[in-house]
Image 1 (tube, helix red, strand yellow):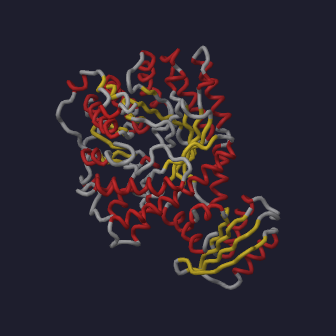
Image 2: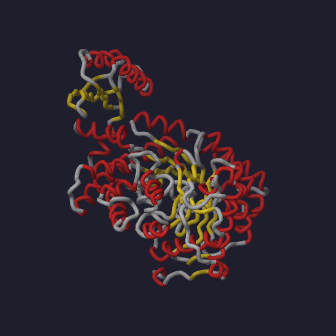
Image 3: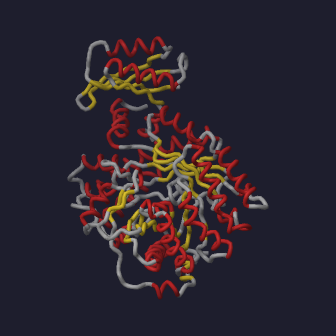
Amino acid sequence: MFTSSQVLETIEMVEKEHLDIRTVTMGISLLPCIRETAEKTASAVYDRVMRKAEKLVPTTEALSKEYGIPIVNKRVSVTPVSIVTAPFAEESALIGFALDRAAAELGIDFLGGYSALVHKATADYEEKFLRTIPEVLAKTKRLCSSVNVGSTRSGINIDAVRLMGELVKETAELTKEQDGLGCAKLVVFCNAVEDNPFMAGAFHGVGEADTVINVGVSGPGVVQHALKFVPEADLTQAAEVIKKTAFKITRAGQLIATKASHLLGARFGIVDLSLAPTPARGDSVAHILEELGLEVVGCHGTTAALAMLNDAVKKGGVMASSRVGGLSGAFIPVSEDIGMIESAEKGCITLDKLEAMTCVCSVGLDMIAIPGDTPASTISAIIADEAAIGMINNKTTAVRVIPAPGKRVGDLVEFGGLLGRAPVMPVHGGDSSKFIRRGGLIPAPIHSFKN
Amino acid sequence: MRAVVTVTGTDRRGVVAQVSGFLFEKGVNIEDVTQTLFGGQFAMMMMVDLSESKEEFAVLAENLTQLGVNIGMNIRIQHADIFDAMHNI
């Protein structure tokens, strides 16, 4: 049983501290959809996604009402499309358009999986697929793309890194009327995970069941609020407070995941323990770090505070869920977090500090606007640096940068909605092009050989 | 199915009678009632059993919200499992 104060605590978490289930994501395998032509495959893909996810939105909305917990996003992830389109890779866009149409008709905001896994090498058909990404992202609204260019086990495919720098630039150019918005739907990963429910990096791994439900919880505001009650606690005690709060948040996610998977006839996949911010005040990861005693996120001590937060969230969440997966940790997107936006506007948080922070949190350089004239090779080098952090530290890292066309350092880029706004940050001016042009594979680190 | 009805707002006469009368009409059995203060405001919680409810959960929830609007209070109904999940190991 529970007490009246616990009931009111939960209500307060939802109504005043932005507790919500950030996403219920249905992973759907597209492997049964492969046909002899791209047209037939696109048709089969559309039919399968529509059939499998038909009840996703009404079911999750009913669950939200029944349990009194907002479920912000309902999404779908699919098998990396490059696998499905290998026999006719140059026509991959047809499948992308079919997926986008399905997403619109299902009433979901994003569908992820226009993806390729090229961490060891890029096959001819994969390169053809990758080259369709800019056009497809420019011509679709809901489709998200991700590319895995490295892993601890395989090393970093610098040929793919080089190509992705160019494709990020091309995507920005093709969506320049919206300040390069297409790049907000494109993530470059190292150590991508197969069960991530969060966009833009979600895809349905080939090792997964046919249809699964993965749930991403959230609640930065709840954690910040809990810390407000212990202003003088030492960091051990603060970590305990975060753990207990993460436990409660994750239990809500576990309950929704179990119920949703049962009602939708899908397997329960995982609960992703991430603290995902939004641009709304009171829903910021940066403000948690500031609550811990930093004047402004980005000042010295930020990396240590984030490491503690990330670890405490995992420890609290792991016990609350029977299956944990995805990215699980604290997200630090710049444009989607009001505390990050304010710090970036003051020039306090920089690309270099963000890179350091990605060593200790769950993802990487996320939703960062950079000058539109940043060379493709510099973007590739940023990707390479981030992939190296992931590869060596055996963790997922990612890059989602937006080289906003025509924008310079200090300009503001507005994406709107959950994607927020971002002040354009400076990148280093030195030329990285020769390093990137070398190509090849950065070999896997010695500690990857565990067999 | 067991659910929790919470009523919050500025205390006024007749709130308990109006909410419990409404639930009685709908065939909802009240198992337990507690009252407390919530941020300086009146807060009442009712543990209810919906097994003989005349209305589907979604309809009942909407009607309770509307009743709240009519009497100037916030009324919510939530499946009890959410509180069990979040506060008990």
